[in-house]
Image 1 (cartoon, helix red, strand yellow):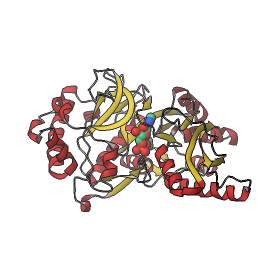
Image 2 (tube, helix red, strand yellow):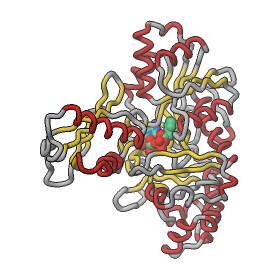
Image 3 (cartoon, helix red, strand yellow):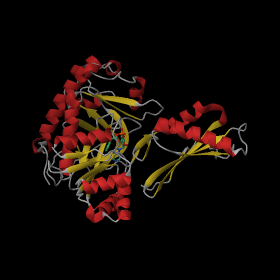
Length: 433
Ligand code: DLL
């Protein structure tokens, strides 16, 4: 396997630290000048940009949170004028309002480079035919993978997600060699390939899968069904999108693109930085991002970092697969869903339903399913099937427009959802991970 930018990906650790320090000092200064919230938080801590001299001072800096993006929606945290922003992406917030991120031309170049490193680590080159079956649009998956593939000169097949049988026919006819999509979609594609009996017609060699948690068992199943090597890729919109970290041929954790992102593991309750190798909340500082930079961003992902040298020769540290989250965000078919978004829809619809609801997530035929059970109000409770169906449809349509996902909606009798004496347990997640 080759390495896309060995001069960067295999840099001496001292060199990485030096670069991170220089860029951090630059980033803190410009954010202090341009981002009101950051300046306010620095002032509250009695910190001036001059107090930050390098990575050793990182832990002095204030954290940033998903809530900040909501409070400063849409553009309030940008560090450049909008005329310098060439792309916007967005992702689910905790309520109906999305969180918005922006990129300058240079940000896109860096993103392309990071994703290019992933694709080359998966065996990609200018001879590859890369089928991008992540969703295109405000979600970062489609255009993120697309940019990386073009960057290495590969031939991109931008199918986006869905239309599974046609997707497979395209894969066969266009001789796609690398597949990029969510692992659950990869598995679904693999099963459909089996059903269609066309595995021997595929030219696929590798896959780059991420945007949601997946297990080693799932990896084996995907590799087996599609006859490929499956690589894990991690990222989040707030930091960049896919390619914040990437898995090499060793398949033992994802190398963090440390020339752009500094990772820390903290105790989610106290905010203390934990010793090397500990499991805790992953925090990122984006030192090169121009349009939407973040310092010490709380990802809410739980994982650990691996500082051991990797056999592939890359010197960037690796993050292990995230094992969970510190918040209640669910990832359903690759889409981020907060229970509060569902609650908001129900409250908005008012009288016919009560805010007593239960979210049931499951995996059927390797595809995630979402069911929302909602209690009817006493007034509407009747045997009139037509009106019940109408209400169910209204809720379903509203959920679809807010979440971007189809959910099964079932109205249940008043007082039939189990009441809790403590915190309501709104979510039943039956997926085995
Ligand atoms: O999911 C970006 C992405 C697109 C990553 C395509 C990889 C491939 P968001 O929609 O903002 O961005 O969701 C970010 O998804 O905080 C994690 O909880 C989860 N996540 C992303 N990649 C992985 C992964 C994209 N490889 C959130 N393993 C993150 C586990 C992942 N969880």
